Amino acid sequence: MHFPAMALRATFCCILALLLSLVAAPSARAATTTGEIKTVVILVNFTDTAAPSNTPAELNQLVFGKVSDFYWEASYQKTFLSGATFGWFTIPVSTTQCTWSQIASEGNRAAAAAGANLSSYTTFVYLFPTASGCINGGGGDIGPNGEHRVFINGVAGFTEQMISHELGHQFGLQHSDGLDCDVSALGNTCVQRGYTDTADTMGGHGHFNAFQKERLGWLNAAGAPPITTVTASGRYTIERYETPGTGAKALKIPKSVDPASGQKTWYYLEYRQPIGFDAVLAGLGNLTTGVQVRTGTLTAGGIGTSLLLDMTASSNATIAYDIWDGALGVGRTYSDAAAGVSFTVVSADANGAVVDVTVAAPPAACVRAAPALVLTGPTSALAAGSTASYTLSVSNRDGSGCTATAFALARSVPTGWSGVLGATNLTLSPGTSSSTTLTVVSSSTAGAANYTIGAGTSSAAGAVHTASASATYAIASKTSGRKTRR
Image (cartoon, rainbow, N blue to C red; front, side, top):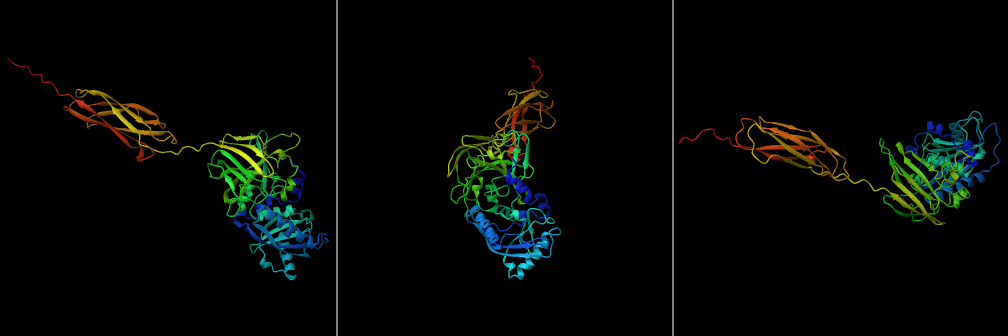
């Protein structure tokens, strides 16, 4: 869906592809995300523009009032900004020939001359009039001394949401996107749309989603509200998302594991209310009356990807992406057959939501056991050189969590005898049995005696699948041909 806010984002927000080419992976250089964030705001003007009408006092209040208040609320009182604002400074740079490095170096020089002790700050925010020569919108990078730098190009970007968004990148967050599918929340044809998680400052407005807050250490960390990781079917309660508390703020349900990389993807469920900095969500369809559902994947290098899912895909044919009714409403169920997961919103009120979750039972562990091997054959004595047929039976006694096993078969007969197996291996599932024949021909010169016929089995599982069995081949005594003389 194309929201009015999204049009603003397209004009003023950072250009993701360009930023990724300029900045190292956020996880490798992310700023501290809890406690006091020491921040300096530097206001710069260019040689070919007049200073904006925004006063330093107004912009100081914007950053250390509204932006800091946003982080204080969104972090459940774990993070805030402190610092000072300096400027306006007219720097010897024009709007058509400017770079971030020029703005930072000249702005820092002017602020230091005005008495700023820049070594005491870890985060630098530069606000300046629209400069066509610089990257549009907002962006950021890491300065030469390891400082985290945010650049806001144009007065239209002097907003709590814009500055909070760019600081979010400095904290290591990527954009919060949406998944636009044609027939259901996950298919058949889906497109990942940038900036379309409208209920997240990294994509739209309001609090960061639960996947992002978990990465920041604001959920599911020491001293932070918990996320309930669902490992068994049951009824679960999630508290209203925006306010501090000891109850779970979200559910985290396993979705899939990438077979190549081992990366895990989870469903995140949260319940939002139009209060505090989430008040901007009021009237946006059912986003504050149903449970919002996202997927979250922590990718290589610690870069995270979250996607808001549309629980009523293609409900409005007149717009491209109708996420405003994307939450899962009371009484509705979402199922993912591939993951063996389903969840139903039982109830929701001003304090929280109740969700029934069904997860498939985990596969039984594979417990190996020695197979049963039985060799049976003739019970009466045979003449030397006779052919005897034996039956070799194998039973797989592994636990039900194991896959089928190929058992290799072998036989042993006395020297000079022959023994031929009907099959040299048998593939058996746990709890099943099968058999083959062992044909034995004794030596014609063998004397009368009981001889041992042996059989054995093994498999790739190793010694646990080694077993043996034996049977007797009896050769009768030869009768004398001499007649008795009277």
